[in-house]
Length: 126
Image (cartoon, rainbow, N blue to C red; front, side):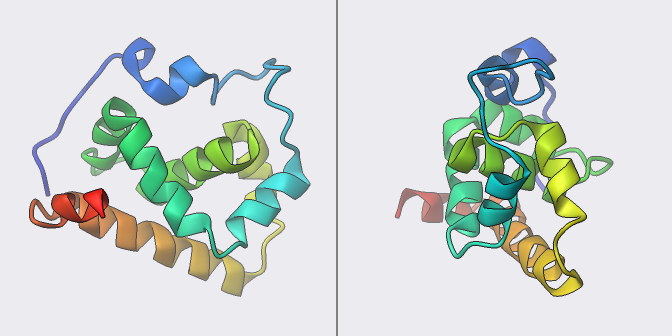
């Protein structure tokens, strides 16, 4: 695993974009939109896009062994793919079937594995 990297929350690109803002009105994604992203074939690509577009947030969250890294990737994917806030995505998660949750976590695990492997970092450039 890469060494732990820390950034203050105000430097996280996802925070700056508004992912955690409970009152953000221009992020109009709802639970149905989050469910569509979480259950889509595009989920892993959106997770990879989050790592690429939000490098400080990705480094902060994906090098913290105490963080639910799968959850962060899901929040980020729904934020990018459907303009869903993190709390909306958390609510949508429990509406997925067990099989859908396992598939989403598998997508996240592949992205995390690629992130942690220094050689695999070059694969994000494909």
